[in-house]
Length: 219
Image 1 (spheres, rainbow, N blue to C red):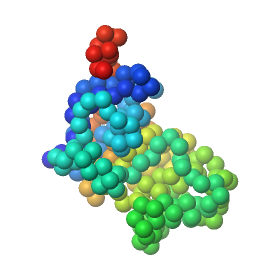
Image 2 (cartoon, one colour):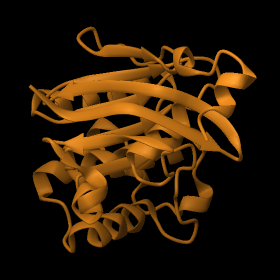
Image 3 (tube, rainbow, N blue to C red):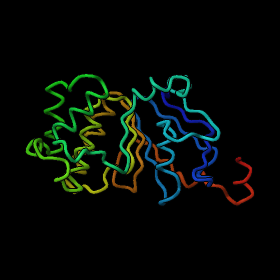
Image 4 (cartoon, helix red, strand yellow):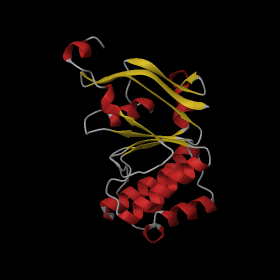
């Protein structure tokens, strides 16, 4: 049974129509892989689901309830990873991760979860390193660890494998698989780096307007 449903979603951004009449359903333990060329609206779709960008039309429901009617409760269920890693340069890796979790829940992660996530993303030796001294790949691993530590039900990941080497991509893949196995769900924008055999694939480009006249009708 679907827990997250997107129905007839249409969106403009910067005055430009991005997608129209887009929809999908995700059950507990399921994932949707958002594909398509750059500029087709994958990132925008994730932002709309996260309530960071308003939709022009359509609805997003969680267990049958409109998420916009309970926006705070919906955001509490989400872990968001965009293109920016959101790492504070003056804070160490440990401080970045702990601060993010305290802001989210008011407490630090359980020791077992903390140790498992740090080991998975190979961050133990980097805990005392300030964020400004991390490489692009290291910053991405810290951002992914922040998602995994959140224990959020819904992961919204925008090209999460960007900047990762092969070993780190495998760690990411394992983290997503474990998340789904515990009943979590995920929506992931990807160019093919993430392989989830049971996931549905949604080509966001299929929901672009066919012509200018159709786009104008979305207003």
